[in-house]
Length: 227
Ligand code: HEM
Image (cartoon, rainbow, N blue to C red; front, side):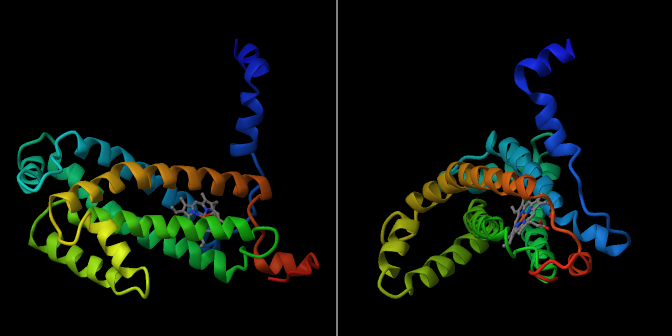
């Protein structure tokens, strides 16, 4: 039956390309550096799952947002745990993506032919920051409100386009109900869709090119790009 499915879907080839591909043999601490991309991907999936669970009890309106977050933390079964996972996952995601970027940079893995993988990575990092910025407002407490006030005001100082950016973010000239709705829409609709799309392109390119070898091995191989 499995052979029947494989013949009609080519799933065995997809499986081979994804899970049986060659990865560079690295030992000791260097081997761990190659796990940072997958770790970022894992945390993204945890964020998607815990975010979906939180969205089931969260109310994105100024009157109810704060109370709904308190309700999630205090009364929903495992609510505090799930919120905690989402909260810490958000920080981990930024840290892991930056560490992954540093390993790619210091190993020269951004060089030919992986320049577009690097560019999609930069988009991913910006999107991850977008998640932090928009998610910060959702608890709608004092810290959330004023942190967003500062953030939108900083964006408003951008030369030429600052005014428009600030108005688009706030949903008007002042922060209020429209800001919360807008940030929520960005956080749960726009950014996840964009991140999922860019991650797919990123992973496609990673599989397409294969993971780069360790820098010293590339030198031994006489690779003109060097380490
Ligand atoms: C949401 C964030 C990200 C996810 C989920 C992700 C995922 C991955 C995965 C799973 C790999 C293969 C395993 C590995 O090399 O660790 C990879 C490789 C790569 N990533 Fe990312 N990545 C992210 C962010 C970034 C960033 C911020 C950059 C750089 C600006 C970047 C650039 C690259 C490059 C150039 C490779 C190829 C490395 C090689 O061939 O050795 N990625 N990424």
